[in-house]
Image (cartoon, rainbow, N blue to C red; front, side):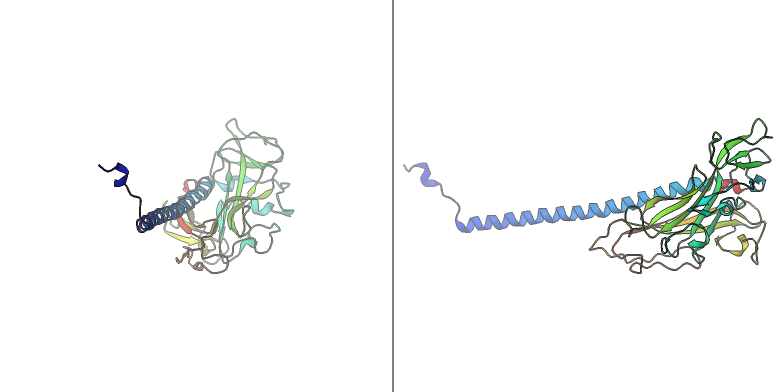
Length: 324
């Protein structure tokens, strides 16, 4: 009888090499699956971040627009009285006339006019994204506020609104009168952001608590903003057509101006890009703003890199306070 060790043998060199090759194939497959899963996750995460950022931008602008023409106890801008001594500044420039243009509860500067026609502050050349619109919104705060020195506020009643900034409620109002902060916002797209000078951003000039227009960033990644107004021409309470911000029917003094036309809705179009480029990605889409005179956006043109992901959104917001 032979010992048991005579029936045992090790692997031959050929068997060992075959085992190593099979192991390498299995490892390669595992690495490939991991790499593909990671790439798929990164794409999904980038898309989710774009959607989240777009929602955030809309969530900031929409409540502001819904309050347009809200003046506390009434919604009539013609009742607003502004004292002669009120002064609002923007980067050292006088912006009082711009801020107190309360007859224009919502408005926009069309991309064909340019950013410089809106805010008189000293803005560096090229700071605003070419081809984007500027959205202007004016109203008072939803909440009542205590009188605060230096803050531009409004004392409102059914038939009168008095603007003041001395921290003392104006006299002559009834017991039901309310005090609110005046809210003025001008939204625009900048070529850079606080995050990165090469990443565009949605920003706004806003009236602060000291009675000055100050520039603040809302979110980075917004490449373009376009605004159209839904106009009710025969005063039926519904939109008859959408027009650009420089359309004659809503421009006082222009040929074709319709004084009875009411802006009852605002259509926003926003184009958002990812923060970081992807070396292997090429954006082959073409983006068409709703403005009739706006240029089509082709990735790869100056200011619109080709190796970033993008999403666009269109949102129509109805203005409840404009239905009179």
